[in-house]
Image (cartoon, rainbow, N blue to C red):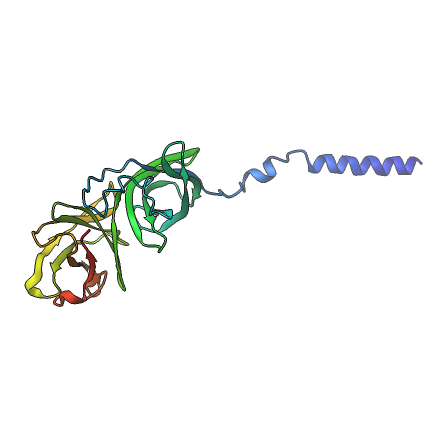
Amino acid sequence: MKKTLFSLLVVATSLLASCANPVASSSSNPAPSTGYSVNISTGASPSTSTSSALSSARSLFSDSNVSTVSVSVLNSSTFASLGTATLSRNTTNSNFSGTFTVSASGSALVYVFGKNSSGSVIWFGSTSATIQSTGTTSITVPTVAALEVTGVNGTIYITNMVSNGFTVSYIPSVIYSTAPALYASVGGNSAGLVTASSALSYSGTTGVYSVSAGTSSSWTTGAQIWVDVLLTPSSGPQVNVPQGTLGQNSTYGSFIYP
């Protein structure tokens, strides 16, 4: 009996010694972060379009053609993806919103895409933000009615389609030392070229390259307009976005003026 009690006492003493400082044993290897919380909301649209095709869509929330609203968050320096999500309709605040985690804190760019049932972008918005390392970062992204022009080399977005004019925007994958240039025409031939070598400007606030195409009396409802953004990287060949060859307007991407 004495041997049994002595054995139990030795075991108990050994266990207590091994657990004397349980916090210190794990403090040098903290658990990895599961991400940084962000809440994204779509804001009131600054769109002032009066064209018949867009006049019923004064806001992303009220546009019945919107099927899904997605968001993409990128690093503002490298343009690497930090996370993506789908936003839900928020009837309380008349917007789309969602809370999710991204893979890094710090400076970021946030893009919102409102898509129709065919998956085409019909609303577009972007903003810059600083994602906090603690708590939830709240970000509001204003959106505008848009048309998406897509080709083999990428996508551009057409906004501000009013008064015989429009704006072209492009989401970069890198910062270009030579500004991308816009070419736009009505009619797929050189005689129809209306805008040539109009430099797009990069905005760190919105995270897009954009430029007004100006105005033209030929840019009217129903007109087919060809657009090309010429990218000149620091190394490698020039690229036409969304597609085409610079000297052949008919190979550009195109859209119908609403």
